[in-house]
Image 1 (cartoon, chains in turn yellow, red):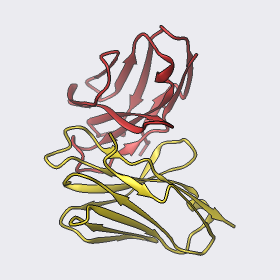
Image 2 (cartoon, rainbow over the protein chains, first blue to last red):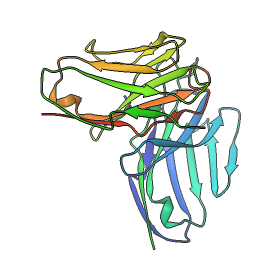
Image 3 (tube, rainbow over the protein chains, first blue to last red):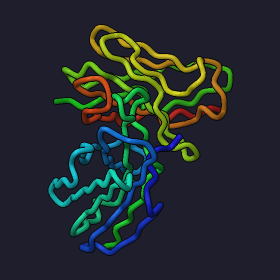
Length: 113
Length: 114
C-alpha cells in the first residue's frame, strides 16, 4: 500500500520558475527521502530528512518536514529543462524499515524551455 | 566508483516461464533491496538482503524469490510468470541494511510477459 502520496500528480512550469511538490504520509516515520526518476530509469536519491529535522537544503533543492501534519515538501528553485522527471517521496516505517521504503506514486514535473 | 548494475536491461518472457534477474551493488555495499514498479501499483518493495540473508520481504507471492551471494551480488527469480508481472524491476544497494540510509538504484530490468 502507498504510504506517501505526492501532490500534484503532474506539474508543468516554465524554465527558471520554482517547482513545489508535496508529500503526505500516514504513519510515524524515522525519515523521509526524496528521489528523482528520469523516464523509466533508475531512481536517483536527492535528500534524506530525519524525523527530528524540519528543513534541509541541497543545492537548488529545499525539503521541509512537518511531522505533526505528516507532510513534506520539495522545492526546486530556478528550474532547468534537465529537472524534467518524476519525483517520489519515500518513507520508512517507524521502527527500522521492516518493509523497505514505501513510495508514493510521484509527481511528474515538466519544465518548459 | 561504478554504480549499481542490473542485467539484463530488457527481457521478454511468456506466461508460465520463469526468469532470473541479476544485480551487482556498488563496491562495499552489502545491502541489496529489490523493488517492482508498475503504472498501476507504483513502486513496491519486494525484499532486502544483507550478508546473504533475507532481512525483509514485501507483500508478494512465493513465486518471487531471491538470494544474495558472498560478494553481495543478488539475484531475484520469478517463477510461473503471469501477465501482471510485467514491470520495471529495480535493485538498490546501500552501505547498511534498513531504510535509514541512502539507497543507490540501478537502471532496472524491464520485464515484459506475453
